Length: 252
Figure 1: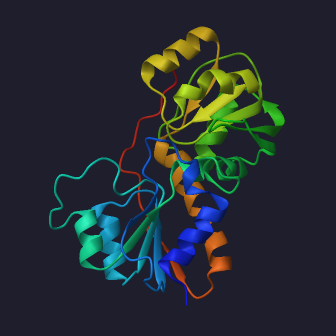
Figure 2: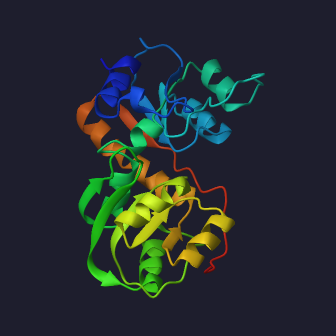
Figure 3: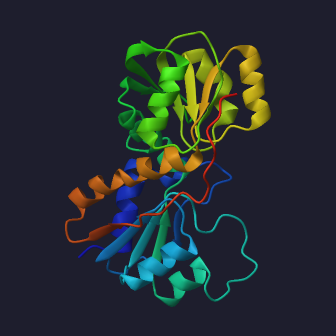
């Protein structure tokens, strides 16, 4: 019999929760550690729709990347994700920044999706670096990223420098731009603000803002294969969560 605690302990063994950032709230957030798990839903965000899906399929656990409870909660209203989980006795575990930096986590999975070689972590950062098989222009590489990650709108800076070494920071990692560019020809991240991209363009940095959902959703769902191999008595279900935001493509 697999329990919520069994799955929590496994995640903790490969992506220790005590490695999360101080501001984060990853961990066991809702439910009973002792509850048996027969069905588990995986998702990027525990939205109302995901919680309702979990209830409809009689799931015992939701495993998310982004914490369902991040800041303080002032109320729990009927129909909210938290309410639905509690009402239907659905436990929630969220693996966030601890999973971002894990060897099996977001950035290493993102590197696998982009088929990078010689993948390594920059110490004490969220940034992973890898190598393309061949040099590419920034235009061609941005198109490759867009096609591979199924980006509906991609933003990138123009540069003449060819791209061979790539730094990755899925989600929101723009604060690591300088160290990423010290170690790579191009930095691919999820969210980069307009003014930071403007600064990068002025500095001649090749950066690609590919979308928070696009860099993290499928990269997190790749973890399902590990879970299926370990917990053979549990049915793991993809929430099939869609991107709530779509952007028109443009180049900075």
